[in-house]
Image 1: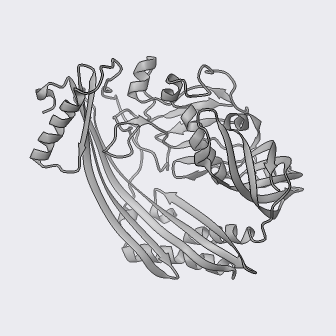
Image 2 (image 1 turned 180 degrees about the horizontal axis):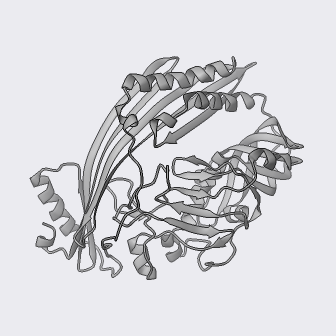
Image 3 (image 1 turned 120 degrees about the vertical axis):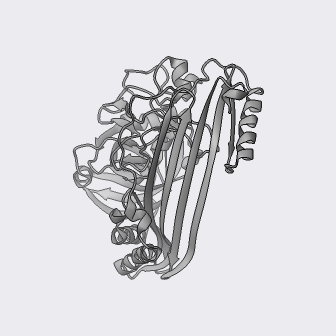
Length: 433
């Protein structure tokens, strides 16, 4: 239809998803929500002008209007020779994304799973007094991409997750602990671990104090380290480089991080929550090594940015939904694990802080890399975690941090689409009272 109306090429992206959310507190279901959505987006090119429109209605009249609107929209955009669609791929990677148990397990069983998380937290320590939320969620989805150049791909997948937010109280003080876990397989969700982990984090922060400003070794918990990855990914986007908004522009094949750091984006990673056979425009997913032992080796591309640089897309044209066009984004984005256990990494710290939480990451500057964040954690004294600490702040630059890493743990942990092991920074100024 699009071609008959004058489009030189066209692409249709379709998606359908069903999401379940269950939240419990005090062993009672507080929220249970089942949501379904489906829709499609169409991109057309006409004289190198891009037109896009989307709809959640699939009737003949709705599709007529959808295509006509995309054609009309293209007349309001500028010509751009880099507006192209990808051609067909020889093959797509095989990625196991569907788990029948996730979909077929009874809702009653999923409610019990959320309740078991809360029970495990309460049993861990008598000081766990309040359950803010213990939850279970899952999603099943289908995606298809077809274009007039021969791309024709379809896949279905599912994933599930659970979380706990509880409050520990003692002598008038309260501290919150949390944990969450996402898996491709329903049977791999561990409610006892989740409950105990959240409770442990809350209890261990009771009695937290401030400290004086000082320079010390800083050890980043995997969760904290993944918070930094979100900002670092901006600098590794080819679009940021092309617009002069990346500190890494012009540094290909030069050292930009510690030799212990290897940073990867892998859209076809086994057991990866963000894995898929192809990206949002039908380009095969792949493993892209961005920083190899400290040396910058590549950037992330969608088809448009790749055309600008005369290279191939890395399969990072990501769509938030059918309502948007494929923008550059990460898939399974992680720092490769090292050879030392977290326990051994901590043992070599005479005086330091184990950072378990940072606040205000949204205020960090993704272009310059500068940040100033509130933080919390535990003091490290002669290799042991001791006094909990709150009301502190850390400041610096993401890129300087990457270069200052002097130990990488073997405990690579993923939080949905980002993962990191424990990281140690030799010296860092921690601001306190």
